[in-house]
Image (cartoon, rainbow, N blue to C red; front, side):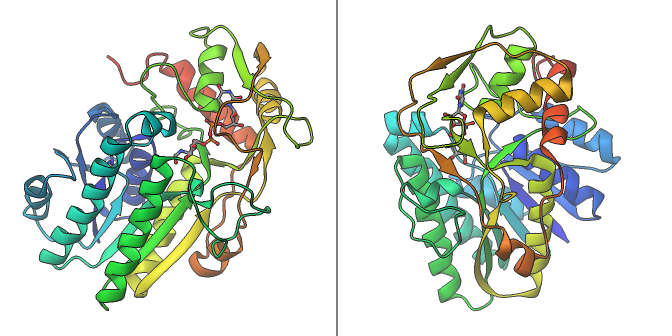
Length: 337
Ligand code: WQD
């Protein structure tokens, strides 16, 4: 099976490429390198001894998409490409709607033109919005609090309606919770540009001395220790979830929505303590005001992933913390030469 990974040079895309190659799939990557490095794919090739060809281009450009499909038959697509910073989406909503939705629509059009019927889409738990009971289940009401989340929600709608109009189409919408960690080799990992927005990469840069202290955004949430609770999932478990989704999509038609999480919530201070214990380090932090837009608690109901995809996360919080630090300490400047 030959699979196109749009945005496949990114954090989750590169880990998924590694997983698919090791499982015997062929991959090809389309990435505009706006938030990724070709070095990630070079390292994937080195780790697997297999080829992960990269076409530099943009999913919003039909001609770039056609260049990819002209390289040879593509059996399935995993669509990672898109802008993904929540805060930035509030500042630049039109950029986010234009980029993320055009990419999804143009990709569907070109897939249909070339007879490719299978798509796995990188969605997000952010589509569940706020004021929900936990754990979050796929049939819960959805509603977003920022343009980034709405682009994921609308893309889910686009793909669902496209599949309803085309009986050959198979769509799996994967709602990620909080991916962290890195491949055990320490050769590929999360390489945020600038000051990290997300918790784990920020913790790693405090551990390496690149940043001084962690800001804990609020300790007055209705949670066990007052800090925000999230469902952190090892990026390699997430990658394996994509493999399971591909296998399901190849055997079925229509649309499935599936959470990819562990079903367990950890607070910010849980993460700090686990990271310190796993790596025998100290992470200095200050309690700061809440970050606007944050919710108190978010974690997944994982039953459907088990029943439909026959997949569940298996790596521990200790694995996530050790692997995150292993990547950081071996690559203090990410993929930069
Ligand atoms: C986790 C917890 C923060 C940084 C985001 C996106 C989501 C998805 C994953 C794309 C929260 C706290 C964080 C820091 C902190 N991305 N925190 N200090 O916000 O749950 O989800 O990334 O799909 O769409 O919204 O992840 O890592 O930013 O925050 O205290 O420096 O850590 O308040 O409780 P989040 P996060």
